[in-house]
Length: 172
Image (tube, rainbow, N blue to C red; front, side, top):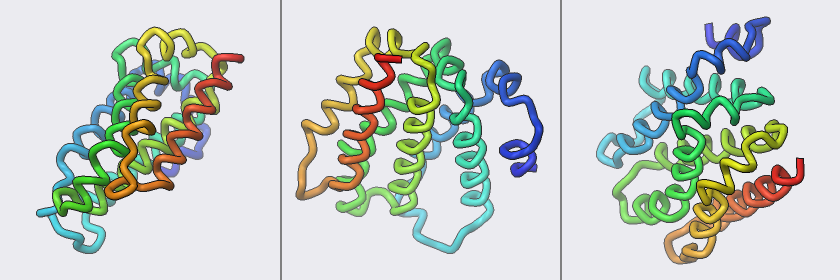
């Protein structure tokens, strides 16, 4: 069923219009706040397969030109910016302290990839929203607050790439 949703002849615009991508972003945020180290690093279980399906669907929908625009009404776009920034500022230090699982880090990386797709495929329609809500500043603060002792340089460079996409988006 997931494969049909992401690669089949389904009209993704109608899915975006239904608000499903925003719902999935809120679901991913809930998964990020729920993924604690005490859950352990056991083999892929049913919940992880569901999470993988959610992420797969989100990536497929995020590559649609109107995906980012569909996230403005309920502030889901702002939420995914905050999730990515939180990955840099909080998640990696919590991981090194043993407070969150490696799986949590993987989910943050997926959130970053999804945000990247949203920005790359957007036609410029969200540039004013990003400016109005100071979302570039959210990402800049994550880079500014980078601590080499507990942060991940590769993740932080990913945020720099997102900042570049935001700048490019403002010229579309």
